Length: 162
View: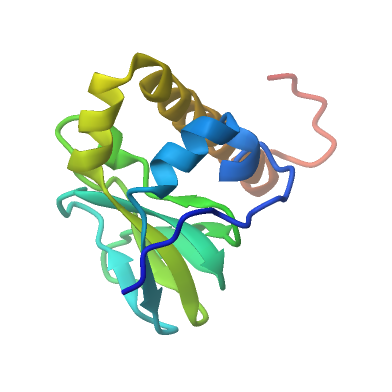
């Protein structure tokens, strides 16, 4: 698979790589990228598996899902172009807390987690940029999950304050 030199992601969402870190740190990260494609229905990873890589979506859609015994996985979030897929690679014990599946043909940049962590340790500025980017992504996803839970479980018009 071909190596790339520069990401072409420019959407301003705070969870996208283009908005999530300084350009020079993004360029450092992209030096470690390789292009990987997934077919619709193909799993990127399974909940409970070893988190040894992560991806940034170039095109297509990926869903994050949670295992539900006896049922299809529950979709937690849909990710599209520029979005980070996988955060567990950054946190020991490096085990996926969710699963991920391509819902359309997906083109990604794939990163080897161990190589990125080594660069983070060697270059504190880069490490800080990556950690802040992942933290922003996690904060955004936590807030989105909270809103979905409130929509699902809160009684409409109850006036209950959280």
